[in-house]
Length: 107
Image (cartoon, rainbow, N blue to C red; front, side, top):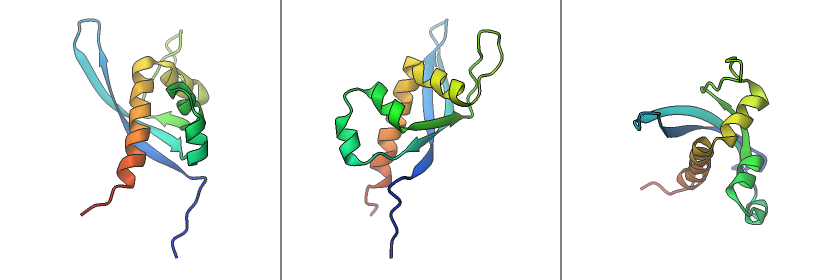
């Protein structure tokens, strides 16, 4: 029998492209751990920022320095990445794509 854990989390790669000061694309990948939300909770969300507040557990494989140049860790790192517009958009795309792709039927 298949057992469904309705309170699951999973690790997902996040692909991010930034434009540097010279107008060139800078590409990278980091990891995020997401929480799967039940459908009723998903329908209640009004904006993408709320989605990340509810599903983003943590991030890794990315460095964000604080104002003194020291790398952020834990919740401070998660919050800094979530608050960056480009990174937030990449996180939202990674979450939505992962839910869709994991449940597509393969032929």
